[in-house]
Length: 147
Image (tube, rainbow, N blue to C red):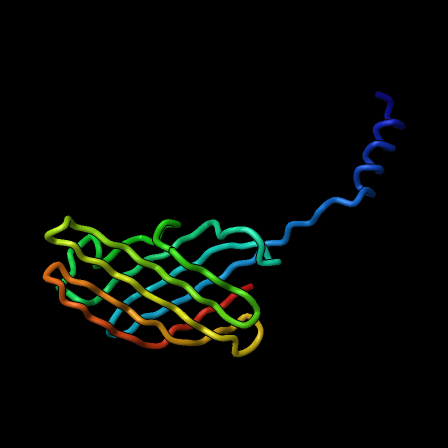
């Protein structure tokens, strides 16, 4: 291919309309007497599609939980509900473990509303089911941001 043809081809590719895929991210944090919680994820800015690049952890400060539930890394399968838009961030992160006689679970629900662009504040609820069947519920303040 001559240089002239290559230049025309390159100019044509640059001038043709191509879809633009903009991504953004959301992250939430809590660190209080009940839990240390951090999560961040990426999503298309138009709100379509799933979340990816999920990173984070939950560390319940309740000492009665089995070790694998007291502190765990958040994976995609732990986020069972998720929502992020201009008005709010909503998450449900959960993990369970044990067997039928020693079942335990941890669930943290986050609901944060927009204060200003890209800044959200709200509440979390931490729900724990211990192996003996005891239910523990704690709550507090959560802060989230987005870009």
